[in-house]
Length: 180
Image (cartoon, rainbow, N blue to C red; front, top):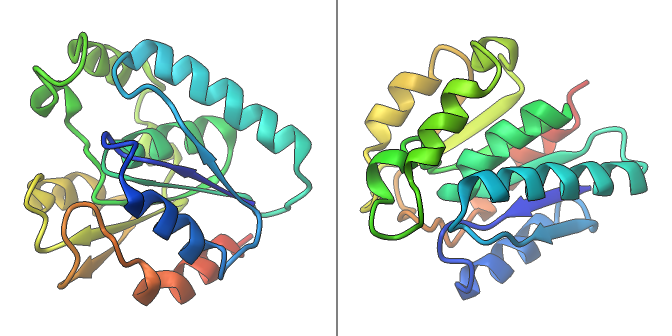
């Protein structure tokens, strides 16, 4: 099973395309949609939904994937639920760059400081970060600085922020998913 979390633009047709691409790895891909506008509510909802999907499923190697804001959530929810994570251009600083787009962006900072201390250290090597060199929305060099000590980073030279085409990375994602 692969759980897919969309980014801030939940209505993007690219979400459906990514789900279809992920089905080449695992036919059981679940898109979990969330509000994107209420961080504390979203965290509670995503934890509950992902836990429910894990209880219903029988995959020994479940995976959670997310793009942009979905990458922010996939890393945290995956850690809390004990799943491996693949994050594409994760928005690691929504409390800085979501102001004016969502209600209470400061809640992201609150979540980050109240989450498990040093969660990336405890999550070491359980997350794969795929970053675009052409990301027009985020500073992925900054993201890499934060993620590199804990996770493998794969750089993509062609993709934009929304990462429309994940196909070049499917084999790596598949082998990462199957790691014990």
